[in-house]
Image (cartoon, rainbow, N blue to C red):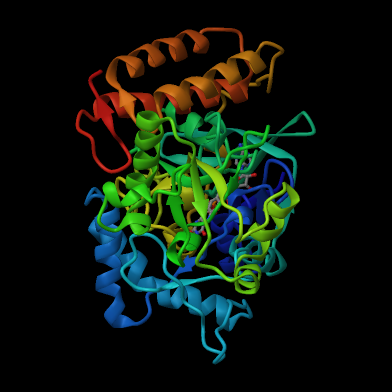
Length: 483
Ligand SMILES: Cc1cc2nc3c(=O)[nH]c(=O)nc-3n(C[C@H](O)[C@H](O)[C@H](O)COP(=O)(O)OP(=O)(O)OC[C@H]3O[C@@H](n4cnc5c(N)ncnc54)[C@H](O)[C@@H]3O)c2cc1C
């Protein structure tokens, strides 16, 4: 039987960057649910933060803490910012091309709640796609696709690898180190910007095993999403548009964000999302993103993919405005880890990227800090694991392996009900009694005869709702009312 040195769950920025940094002579297996590019990383538009220079580090830290409503862990934020220059420069030195300005210098842009232009982008608004392609091309290890992790092989404080279903066949993958890089929870919400593979499965496994999840109630809703299509995954209109002059307005062209926050379009995401939600509720007006300040050729060059995607559905940008709504975007909470991204209480289990809670984001993520978090903390995790060189022992393999049915016929109706509950009751504005009722409904679904993946989604949803009920005071992305 093969024992791998490392098994990595996920082929987004966090998983692939970890793989890139593990030497070729190690035996590594990377697993992903569908194809490698079905991940949130592929869809990222705006960019990656890199502190401009040493003097910018304290300012980036301050911006991150302020956006996170100071619920962040200052040590994690400091690490993120201090390492941002090295990890981004390492990509550049290894051949990754960020966009440059007319003088041939790196073209830094600004997004909401950043006090300086410090975001790098690639192919205009396709940073995620370019970064993902680069990481795939530079991946020295084997990737297996269509492999769904349905359990972690845990005994005491050691993870012995993963239990996967591959073409409906059960396989145990044993490994000395396991790195979870399985992303967020988007698919448990009715409207979201995420890839279809992102449904909080591994967070559900952690709940089942009694592992610590932190800040799960901290859910970021992206304010400017074009939600006018039949799919759950919706077209995001990047923050960089507002950073460079796009305006949120009502049906009559009134730029109402000025009535909510002094920074208007550049206020933090939670503030803008709540303002749009509130204005729409109060006035009934459809909300739009308008691009009057842009010239056509400049817009096409800077945002080529948004230009094309919206042209395909009948909008002539920048001349026409686009109807928008907030939608689920990002999970700030996750599996609690230390500053090496090691899961608390485990010897050889790591969690990196959106699935983890490093403490970097607090109550609200600062735009473009998440690709950076994936890069920085995968680097730290790999360094720690290589130094520790932990070995599992076949004598201690867990003997209680369970076999599951992935999905059952009745799952679809419950899955849709769950997505509606989360959208309606665990969204931008939460009402305590609605949360309590939702928890009861989830508990009752958990008792039904359902497939493994739905069971895990329900456990993840339960952890979000319990977190929301426990957090009595509104802070950052968590806004709670009694009625
Ligand atoms: C539309 C959009 C735009 C964004 N723009 C930006 C931006 O400009 N800048 C920024 O910093 N952030 C942005 N974000 C957020 C950022 O893209 C993500 O937070 C980040 O890419 C997450 O990376 P990750 O490696 O943690 O997970 P992902 O890239 O989501 O990868 C998760 C991987 O885990 C696998 N997986 C999941 N469950 C299982 C399972 N049970 N078994 C096996 N495999 C599994 C998936 O198949 C996938 O390969 C954006 C997000 C979206 C959706």
